[in-house]
Length: 291
Image 1 (cartoon, rainbow, N blue to C red):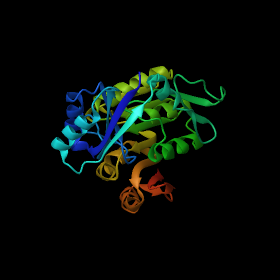
Image 2: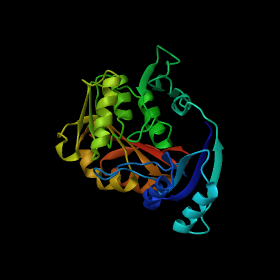
Image 3: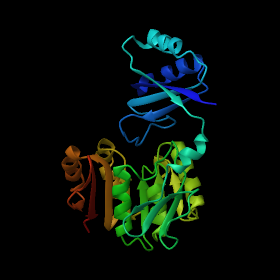
Image 4: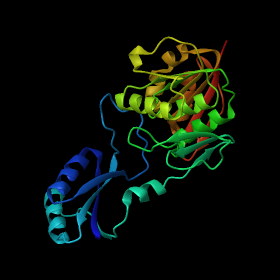
């Protein structure tokens, strides 16, 4: 049976209202998507992260009166509201979605592979992940920058901290690349659960430990990873420095190009900072803690 999908663009604040309207008008399902490739980093505890610019799509049976649905939406949301109506052929949409993800290489050794795909190189370091809300697949520049740094580093028997772990993608990469212990910190319980699950899937659950911020032990890390945002990175600078051993490496991301100088200057109190690595609009900063 063919289907009809009706798409609207809205703000994150209004997306729930639009979702409720579509369901009330007979939609059999509603999906929300990022309209502008916005990363979701460090949501408040218990919050469900949502994008500032969100595309909301309602899926309807083919016999729906689209004129009535669109009129009702405009009556509630404004007459100038752009609405896109599309016919959709019947498919196995779960299979379509799964097929859209392919293994991705980060550097020379490390691959991120959806768990239902066969790794392209059985001898590589293959991280198996399921894409989902609490985490990404490494495709965003902020994560990719960190994964490439990890691929190039000697992590054998190192102690690593992933501060703001999200999915645990960086932590798992570090464990697979030889770290002897990885401490993961996040203020979102969903992220801690996702990290545990992904660690077990990749058979590194004995290497990775997860903590909310207040429970993090005062360890001395050989590598400090933090892929969050510029503001939190600057406010956490002294704390992250205190968790990093003398001679230890610092890797920061989630930073826009125009924020890089200020973040780098903040950490230069404790670290010898390297030139920024750039990917698109985003920056990775790295450095070594002074002895």
